[in-house]
Length: 116
Image (cartoon, rainbow, N blue to C red; front, top):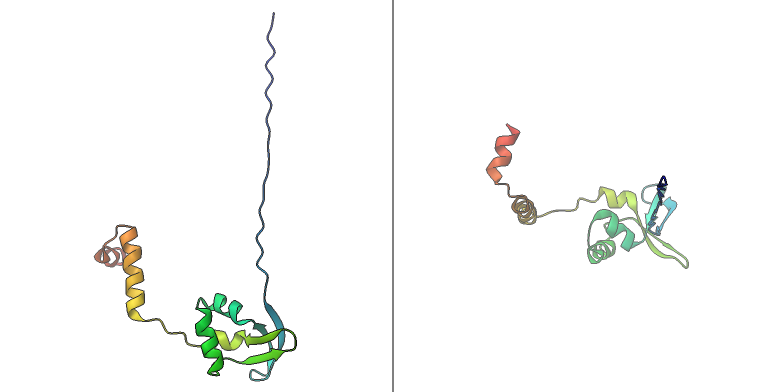
């Protein structure tokens, strides 16, 4: 008697979409004299990779173009945000580079040798 062999394959697909709610609008900026994208301070901090408190301090020291909208709050012009010269301290950068090199077991002089 012959045996019958049956194979069953099950295929499944799974997808995950993550969407951040955007807190920005397109509006006229009086200082730029053009239509610009305006964002809430929290969104501006995220886009600039900075702390929200720093962005708010800079807002109140008139470093960015601002516009207040009824029922929406205070928004920052992203053009002025992009043009602002955020400063990075050399010590911070040096520590960060040293951490990366330590994680990868690379000596500083190895990088110089590889570039030559």
